[in-house]
Image (cartoon, rainbow, N blue to C red; front, side, top):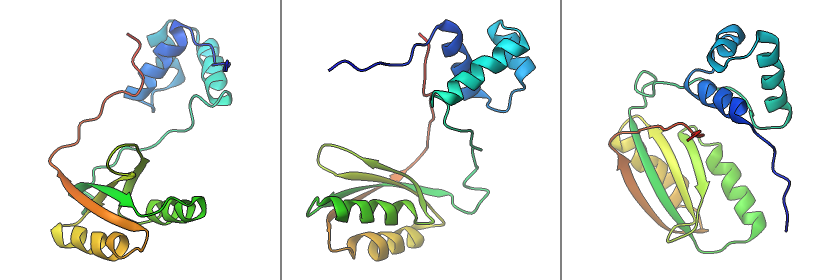
Length: 157
């Protein structure tokens, strides 16, 4: 099966790399960094957005400053895998106040849930009240995050 992938040249990749490090950069600064005129830079950005490559821009928050200094990754294994149950399960977990990310994965777990909480008691309450109490959940394994390191999503080399 052939899939038509979007075409990217070195300038597109460079724009994406710069934006991942500073999405608030002005168009003029971006143009200077990638070697384009401001109008050409703006056209490239517009094209990347229209093609769905750039889905949006988000603020990176300091969770400690928000009173949520403890992060955990919770591996969740389910009893069953019915689509309607999964849709509800995903929707409800994504909408938890403590949820940062939810990943549907292969391996021993079916989902990995990335949480931010106030303290160990808050984590225990979320695990007990929102996860292990669910009938579709077979097993939960919780790992505390000591430190979170972020990498650029797209690398040009």
